[in-house]
Length: 137
Image (cartoon, rainbow, N blue to C red; front, side, top):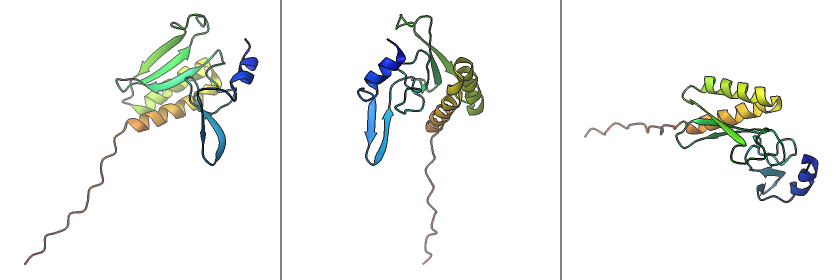
Protein backbone atom coordinates (compact mmCIF):
# COMPACT_ATOMS: atom_id res chain seq x y z
CA UNK A 1 0.00 0.00 0.00
CA UNK A 2 1.38 3.41 -0.88
CA UNK A 3 2.01 5.96 1.83
CA UNK A 4 -0.57 8.34 0.32
CA UNK A 5 -3.37 5.79 0.61
CA UNK A 6 -2.26 4.80 4.10
CA UNK A 7 -2.27 8.46 5.14
CA UNK A 8 -5.83 8.95 3.85
CA UNK A 9 -6.91 5.98 5.96
CA UNK A 10 -5.20 6.86 9.26
CA UNK A 11 -5.12 10.67 9.24
CA UNK A 12 -8.35 10.99 11.25
CA UNK A 13 -8.58 7.43 12.62
CA UNK A 14 -5.61 6.32 14.63
CA UNK A 15 -5.10 5.07 18.17
CA UNK A 16 -2.14 7.43 18.48
CA UNK A 17 -4.10 10.67 17.92
CA UNK A 18 -4.38 13.07 20.83
CA UNK A 19 -6.40 16.28 21.05
CA UNK A 20 -6.19 19.00 23.67
CA UNK A 21 -8.78 21.48 24.84
CA UNK A 22 -8.68 24.87 23.12
CA UNK A 23 -5.94 23.68 20.72
CA UNK A 24 -7.19 22.98 17.20
CA UNK A 25 -4.02 21.11 16.22
CA UNK A 26 -4.01 17.30 16.54
CA UNK A 27 -1.04 15.50 18.01
CA UNK A 28 0.19 12.01 17.25
CA UNK A 29 2.30 9.98 19.68
CA UNK A 30 3.43 7.01 17.59
CA UNK A 31 7.06 5.90 17.45
CA UNK A 32 9.27 7.52 14.77
CA UNK A 33 7.28 10.78 14.91
CA UNK A 34 9.82 13.31 16.18
CA UNK A 35 7.57 16.36 16.20
CA UNK A 36 4.44 14.62 17.56
CA UNK A 37 2.31 16.36 14.94
CA UNK A 38 -0.38 14.60 12.93
CA UNK A 39 1.08 15.16 9.47
CA UNK A 40 1.99 12.93 6.56
CA UNK A 41 5.57 14.15 6.54
CA UNK A 42 6.34 13.21 10.15
CA UNK A 43 4.09 10.16 10.54
CA UNK A 44 6.04 7.16 11.78
CA UNK A 45 3.60 4.49 10.66
CA UNK A 46 3.40 5.14 6.93
CA UNK A 47 6.86 6.40 5.98
CA UNK A 48 9.56 3.94 4.98
CA UNK A 49 12.29 5.98 6.65
CA UNK A 50 12.05 7.00 10.26
CA UNK A 51 14.14 8.04 13.26
CA UNK A 52 13.16 7.93 16.92
CA UNK A 53 15.07 9.44 19.84
CA UNK A 54 14.30 8.18 23.35
CA UNK A 55 15.82 7.38 26.73
CA UNK A 56 16.43 3.71 27.51
CA UNK A 57 16.10 2.08 30.93
CA UNK A 58 19.73 2.79 31.84
CA UNK A 59 19.23 6.52 31.27
CA UNK A 60 21.16 6.57 27.99
CA UNK A 61 20.07 8.30 24.82
CA UNK A 62 18.82 5.75 22.25
CA UNK A 63 18.45 6.52 18.55
CA UNK A 64 16.27 4.03 16.66
CA UNK A 65 16.38 3.92 12.85
CA UNK A 66 14.03 2.08 10.49
CA UNK A 67 15.92 -0.25 8.16
CA UNK A 68 14.50 -0.24 4.64
CA UNK A 69 16.22 -3.49 3.69
CA UNK A 70 14.50 -5.48 6.40
CA UNK A 71 11.15 -3.70 6.39
CA UNK A 72 9.36 -7.03 5.82
CA UNK A 73 10.93 -8.42 9.03
CA UNK A 74 9.44 -6.41 11.92
CA UNK A 75 11.89 -7.73 14.51
CA UNK A 76 14.93 -6.74 12.46
CA UNK A 77 13.44 -3.60 10.89
CA UNK A 78 14.62 -1.29 13.69
CA UNK A 79 18.29 -0.68 14.47
CA UNK A 80 18.99 1.02 17.82
CA UNK A 81 22.17 2.91 18.72
CA UNK A 82 22.82 4.04 22.27
CA UNK A 83 24.76 7.21 23.00
CA UNK A 84 26.44 8.27 26.21
CA UNK A 85 24.30 11.12 27.49
CA UNK A 86 26.76 12.42 30.08
CA UNK A 87 28.09 15.11 27.76
CA UNK A 88 25.08 16.82 26.21
CA UNK A 89 26.83 18.68 23.41
CA UNK A 90 28.58 15.65 22.00
CA UNK A 91 25.38 13.60 22.24
CA UNK A 92 23.45 16.27 20.34
CA UNK A 93 26.16 16.40 17.67
CA UNK A 94 26.04 12.61 17.28
CA UNK A 95 22.25 12.63 17.02
CA UNK A 96 22.45 15.36 14.37
CA UNK A 97 25.00 13.39 12.36
CA UNK A 98 23.04 10.15 12.55
CA UNK A 99 19.73 11.80 11.64
CA UNK A 100 21.20 14.05 8.94
CA UNK A 101 22.98 11.15 7.29
CA UNK A 102 19.81 9.09 7.23
CA UNK A 103 17.12 11.65 6.39
CA UNK A 104 18.13 15.30 6.28
CA UNK A 105 14.76 16.82 7.23
CA UNK A 106 14.86 14.93 10.54
CA UNK A 107 18.21 16.30 11.73
CA UNK A 108 16.90 19.39 13.53
CA UNK A 109 13.77 17.76 15.05
CA UNK A 110 15.93 14.86 16.27
CA UNK A 111 18.35 17.26 17.95
CA UNK A 112 15.46 19.15 19.54
CA UNK A 113 13.94 15.94 20.88
CA UNK A 114 17.32 14.79 22.22
CA UNK A 115 17.85 18.17 23.89
CA UNK A 116 14.48 17.96 25.65
CA UNK A 117 15.16 14.40 26.79
CA UNK A 118 18.60 15.31 28.13
CA UNK A 119 17.10 18.30 29.93
CA UNK A 120 14.50 16.04 31.53
CA UNK A 121 17.25 13.83 32.98
CA UNK A 122 18.76 16.68 34.98
CA UNK A 123 17.53 16.91 38.53
CA UNK A 124 16.73 20.38 39.77
CA UNK A 125 17.96 21.03 43.25
CA UNK A 126 15.40 22.34 45.69
CA UNK A 127 15.64 26.03 46.41
CA UNK A 128 17.12 26.61 49.83
CA UNK A 129 15.02 28.62 52.23
CA UNK A 130 16.76 31.61 53.77
CA UNK A 131 17.84 30.95 57.32
CA UNK A 132 16.39 33.44 59.76
CA UNK A 133 18.46 34.36 62.74
CA UNK A 134 17.13 33.33 66.10
CA UNK A 135 15.85 36.22 68.17
CA UNK A 136 18.14 37.03 71.06
CA UNK A 137 16.37 37.53 74.38
